[in-house]
Image (cartoon, rainbow, N blue to C red):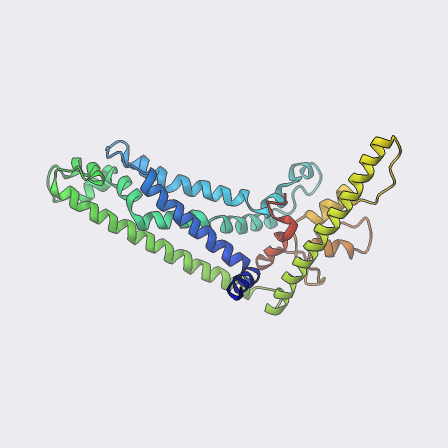
Length: 317
């Protein structure tokens, strides 16, 4: 029981890190399954290169796009965007939207980079693709047996008669694994630099960030509870009036504009300390005042978690 509680506490304290870890493990496991159960190199000079590249890159592209689809922040940015585009201001300042897209892309890139790295370490996809590349075959077979270049596409299936061509398979696997480790090293270095920079540029302290996350968790729990209660009461009243042929009582429900304002992407303003768009909305000075964009509002990368708590997960949408 104590061990289960420790795991639960770890999940509550570091949900994002554990989420990335789970995605990485599932992606690596999926790649291994594909390479063993599905992938079969055709060992053809015409098909080796496209076949190997398709297995190496197309699943990575699919995972990248899936990362966008599963991000609640994507839909928070896009929902109603075209309708708002007809009015002045469109979807908001372009620079702010571009920064959000960069953050979304960086998050979505975790799974595809894992796929490519694990695939390169395994070597099967690269061996198949490289053995079908005529320029690479000429380079590798330079100074070797005359039949090496023609026999190289057969090497992944261990059908090459030329001994030099079969020996080159080990060289191709070594190249693939070296590229895999280089990719892993580059990603780790970039991640370390990027994390250090956004932490360094944070406008709030380490402890305030922790408090901020606690506040958001509580706000979303209460919002979901109150929204459920309000929706239930409204539905009961409407159904009751339908069967009784009577007029419903008046319920105060936020307007479309109110929902749009609290659903917009969070922007930080050093002059005002608000922990969410809902927090900013209820503290506006005038009811007609827009909270979407003010002078001094900026998108802070480290505060991206404000847009993706609780009710704003894709599952709830």
